[in-house]
Amino acid sequence: MYKEDHHSIMQSIRRFLASEVDPFVDEWEAAEIFPAHALFKKMGDLGFLGINKPTEYGGLGLDFSYAVAAGEAMGYVRAQGVSMGVGVQTDMATPALTAFGSEELKREFLVPAIAGEVVVSIGVSEQGAGSDVASLKTRARRDGDDYVISGSKMWITNGTQADWICLLCNTSDGPSHKNKSLIIVPLKDGGKQAKGIEVQKIKKFGMWCSDTAQIFFDEVRVPVRHRIGEEGMGFIYQMKQFQEERLGAAARRLAAIQLIDETANYLRQRTAFGKPLLDNQFIQFKLAELKTELEALRGLVYMATQTYINGGDVVELASMAKLKAGRYPARSPNGACSSRAAWGTPGTTRSRVPTATSGSAPSAAEPTKS
Ligand SMILES: Cc1cc2nc3c(=O)[nH]c(=O)nc-3n(C[C@H](O)[C@H](O)[C@H](O)COP(=O)(O)OP(=O)(O)OC[C@H]3O[C@@H](n4cnc5c(N)ncnc54)[C@H](O)[C@@H]3O)c2cc1C
Image 1 (tube, rainbow, N blue to C red):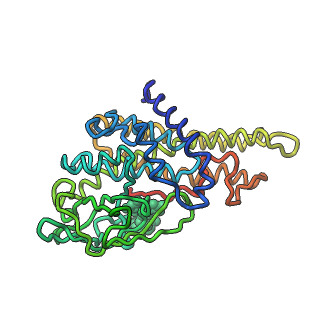
Image 2: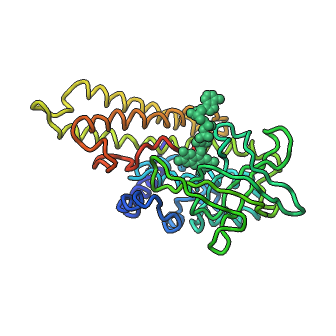
Image 3: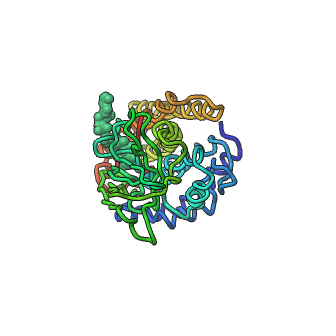
């Protein structure tokens, strides 16, 4: 699927990560936050936050295969918390705004997000509504030309740093798939938390440097013009928005090929009973299986991407890709890293092993709606 241009973008992103991100990930992991504003500004200046966004809003105007290539390149970062935070900005919080937002809304909120002048977030999940999106309770009641929003959102990536959130909430009492709207809600006002907004940081098992928060909305007033598209269409828009999220997340997982290569290199150097561990056929079988599964995932991701670009429905293919990608790390680090644990490297410690791809602890905990 990739042509020369795709590879150029991937190389640029990987060069950027190697110089601007990887040297700092230990510090950011320990701090449980990365400096999203500073990093996103640099990425925005290089065009990395608007690869497939229209040029009139500052994007590069390329088709979605380039966004998938960029996602794959982002997967090589040494802390997946960073790639997840970036993925929220590019693939999760902005696709619906791009596709259905008014011109005014795109100028006000999309342009700065693509330029990296703001950090953004997506608010779908709630404490009592995760997989079952339709059951969410956060509500926006109409008051003249404003919506007044009350409720809360859970697991919000970039949550403590975000300037705005693309919020899915109920705007009427109708059937649960037709009573929701997506609304852009500013979270900051003059550098401080906006009136009625409270943000509480959540500590996680993995993805440490990605800040995740629960956000509370207490009678938060936003103009009705902040609504994306038609009232009552939010659930449908969000389901469409999930397609890019799923493919972006699956593309990032393809970089696990590096983990397999690095593990093979390690096993080549590590000897036991007089020969390199890699010379044991069982280990070769295991690595071959991991690589085969990853290449099968690659085929699925690229096929879904082509279908998506051609205007096809990819709900099933993208969900399958996300499912496989989400399960893959459970096999790969377990398959590969448990070998390290058993064979004498610090696979069981919290320290990052020198050959690890992700740099983060378990990375299965990604925003996911499959
Ligand atoms: C690190 C991280 C970052 C996230 N970032 C965001 C974000 O930025 N924005 C956002 O909106 N959300 C975010 N999420 C939430 C995420 O997208 C999922 O929606 C959420 O984790 C799933 O909801 P839940 O945890 O309430 O699980 P539940 O929906 O309660 O599910 C619990 C378990 O039950 C299973 N289950 C659910 N329904 C069924 C069923 N019908 N049949 C069988 N089994 C079922 C699930 O598979 C799961 O194993 C994030 C989550 C994490 C962990």
